[in-house]
Amino acid sequence: MLALGPAFVVTVVTQGDVRFIVKRPAPRLANDARARAMMTREATALEALGGHGAPRLVASGEDEHGPFVVSSLCAGKPLADYVHSTLTFPTVASSVLAALATVHARGVVHGDPSPANVLVDGDRATFVDFGLSSTVEGPGASSSSSAGGAFAGTLAYAAPEVARDGGDATSPASDVFAIAVVALEIVTARRVRPALPAAALLVHAVEVPIEGKFLDEIIPGLSRALSPDPSQRPLAEELAAAANAKARASGAW
Image 1 (spheres, helix red, strand yellow):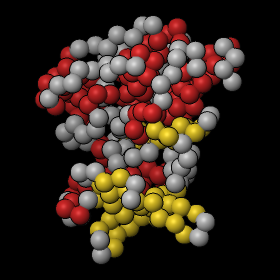
Image 2 (image 1 turned 30 degrees about the horizontal axis):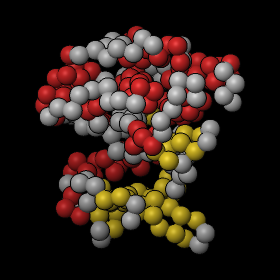
Image 3 (image 1 turned 120 degrees about the vertical axis):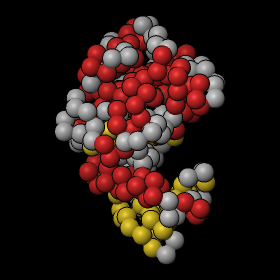
């Protein structure tokens, strides 16, 4: 078993020499409508992404144990396990932002970028856990309402509009905001938002701006990703290009 959480069970299975990930709702949630909807969103997103910036969808459906999603097992360790200096971070950031740009270019919003939901293996990054994903018309567009409703996700990295309006406010811009918060935590080695009860943290996420102007010294434009105004945030593609240029200029590649 790979992981047992309050909502989902993730296991690794082997067929011949190939290993796969099987994800199911926890037994108590096998018939829960929300858990089923998240499984459907995950399968839909992985199918749309075709293994680009995300695991490859192998199968999805339902059996006597409930709904399931089978996907490829991706190499790497969670971004949460990385601690980077400002000199080496642009290389990893370039991979992460390039993967996010690929996800967005294929019309998918992740909906919950966090250090646990990004795997890094050398110069390759993979986003996982698309249960809160949604679809968009283009990289700068708003998301569909498929992940709508009250807030769900990792509050420590939520964009203010998502903390305020819930899943209906997710967009490529909210994904970019979350990754910028992750970057700020990695390079400062400290939590950006305080440890508060969920209700208080929701209010904090909506009302308290995050300062990170020095991030521009690491990756030009990254501080704009923390703007409270989604329209002022750069695209993941723009940030990926800036991170790549910075990494090459610093000789990190």
